[in-house]
Length: 536
Image 1 (tube, rainbow, N blue to C red):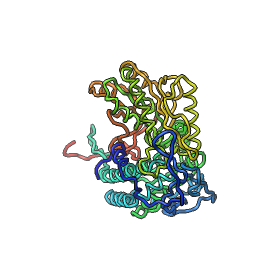
Image 2: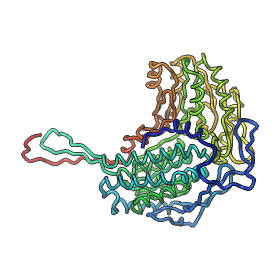
Image 3: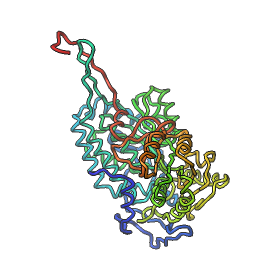
Image 4: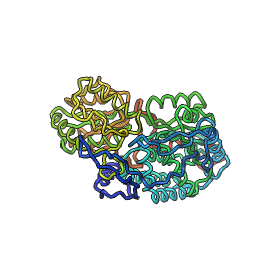
């Protein structure tokens, strides 16, 4: 399957027919689209996807089971705040059950003892099954998360499949080395699976984060206990079922839905978990790292927050720069850890950029994410909605200029108007904190030394964007910016082979690519004495 990029696929998805590819159930009067702010619309009665939710239990040892406590919690439709389904609420006892199943599967089961080629075949079969169920999965992802259906169906599901096929390709190519030694010894290194991997994924890209975590762990021969985000538990359970249909042995992949302070903390601190991987906020990541260290000193991979600069140089084509900066910030409702949330624009083009960026934000289509052509759905929940609104209030109370937006969109659900601030300064909260919402902050800079200094003055270091026609400028900025990724004249290119991770408080370790395999392998040296060797 050809490599796919989120940005290019998204642009194609928005040009599709307005007829939804899935059948949708509609009310007798599903309302008219309206807006006093943009050409988009919020609907009075939402489109309900024709998806049967069959899996709401925990997946432990190859079976769907109730939580030990019998508790359930609701998962909500962010378009309305209505309950979609009630899901089993896992806690420490359920984590114990899942870890025991994963431990038995690793120590006694067939998965790590299979030939690598057998693992390849199962992972590839799983990818094929996901491809067949992609519309159903995309609809469920949109319903539970609020992201545009076309984004989920045309961008994220193909990337999900591509990621697993990529890791299937690596599964039978993991090997050690033969090492020369200063003496009569034969030395080899073995790359062994680390064991039981605990994984905690976030709500903003549930399926993609599932692939980033599960793919390399399984390719290396590990077993897994995965905790989903309480806001978005549904798609992981469905793909878990598909994995077992593909032939995954029981206990290899266990999925527990639940909350961070209970299930998440129990997983991070579990003495029989050999490795923990977490994606989420920096503050929670610090807690996960502390729990990992205080338990059995398990290694941790952390992909955390960001406040990424997007730098528009004076030689830029302003129209193209506006469009790319808009995408870099507003993609996925701004709920992206690497969002270009500090837009630095050279003073020579600043005024033109601000004017055009404001007009682009006003044209952004907001509404029911199941309607084709909608660019922006709701924020994930009331907590995130209120957080975004607090930051907008902070911006308006500072000396930043509110160019557009700044209010709730519609009267139902968690929609926020696309918001643009100009005259933003480094000491403002909107320039320092990760807002995780559709709020663009535009700052002015004088020269490269000025913008390098300011862009690096942050506790984060996840990603950056550079927009310029000058190769020397691009090279200077690429090397000077203290971030794990620098996109030059592009943004959010997430190919499977490209590593992703942060500097500073944006985390440790790398997701995706060959580098991610290191997170799930141990290196063992085997030294054997040689008697009267013919050569050394």
